[in-house]
Length: 380
Ligand SMILES: Nc1nc2c(ncn2[C@@H]2O[C@H](COP(=O)(O)OP(=O)(O)OP(=O)(O)O)[C@@H](O)[C@H]2O)c(=O)[nH]1
Ligand SMILES: [Mg+2]
Image (cartoon, rainbow, N blue to C red; front, side, top):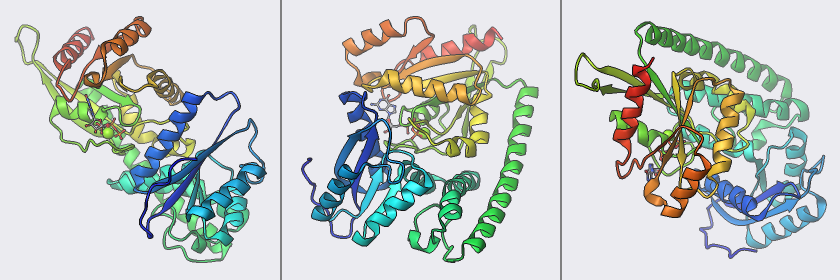
C-alpha cells in the first residue's frame, strides 16, 4: 500500500485499479499505472490509493474478482476515497453492477473510457471537437442507458456535454432524445468533413506539400509545430492538450536560394495513447484524416521515455488501423533529457528506419529537419 497523500475534504479522492494479464511484467505494470495517474491528474483529481489484479479473464459481472473487490471496498472506506476508476474498458453491465455495489458507500465507479472522455470534454475547444466528444460519449453511454435502464439523473453530471441536462428518468424518452441528438451531430460532423475534404482538394490542386505530425500524447507534437511555424498552439505537460487539427505554414527557400522557394504545411493533431477507445478513434476520424492524408508523416517520439519502443508500436498500430499509408519518419524529440547511453541505444535499435533527432526546447536539430523536408519535397 502507498503512503496516502493529504487531501482537502472537498477533493475527489480516487482509488485506481488496473486489471492486467498474468504475464504483465512489473515495469509495464508500473508504466500503465503511472499513465493512469497522469490521466487522473490531467483532469485535476488526486489518486490516493492504487492497486492491480493479475487475472487473464476479468469477472463477467463485476470485472474485478470478488476477493480484490472486498479489499478495495474496505480500503476506500477506511481512507474516505469517493471515486473508483478502473483502468480498463468495461462492458455496460459490468460498470452497472460495480456502480450498484459501491453506491451504498457513496462511491462512484468509472472506467478508462469515462476518464478519457472527461479529459477530452474538458480540452475540446472547437465546435467540431466538442461534437466529436459528444458523439463518442453518446456511443459509449448509450448501451449503458439502453441496456440497463440506468437513470441518467443518477450519473450526477458525469459525462460530456451531450449527456448533461438530461434529468429524465424515462429510458424511452432518453433513448429517443439521444438518437435524435446523435443524428444531428453526425449530420453536422459530415458537413465539417465535407469542408475538410474541399480544403484538402484545394491544397492538392495548389500542390501544397503537407507534413502530418503524429505521435503519442505529450511527445511534443504541438511544440514542434510551434517551433517550425510560429503558430503558438497550446503545448503543455498534459495528456491530450491538443484535440483538433492545427495547421501551420513553413516557408523554405530553395537550396541555392534560387526561385520562389516552397511553402510547406504542417498539420498537428490529437495524440495517441495505449488502449485508445475505438469510439474515440471513430469520432475523431475526420480530424485524423487531415494528418494521415499528408505526403509524409512525422512520428514524434519522446526519446527520454523509458517505454519508447512500446509507444512507437502503439502509434504505428493506430496509424495502420486508420489506414495511413504514406512514408513515416521517426522524429526523436526531447534529446535534451537523454544521456549518451539512451541516444546510442536508440540509434542502434532504429538504425534501419528513417530517423531525425531534435530537441524543440533547445532548438536543436530543427535546421536538419527542415533540410530533410526540403530534400523530400524536391524529389517529388
Ligand atoms: N525537455 C523537453 N520538453 C519538451 C520538448 N518538446 C516539448 N516538450 C514539453 O513536452 C510537453 C508536451 O508538449 P506538447 O507539444 O504539448 O506535446 P503534444 O505531443 O502536442 O501533446 P498532446 O497534444 O497532449 O498530445 C510540454 O510540457 C512541452 O514543453 C523538448 O524538446 N524537451
Ligand atoms: Mg498537442
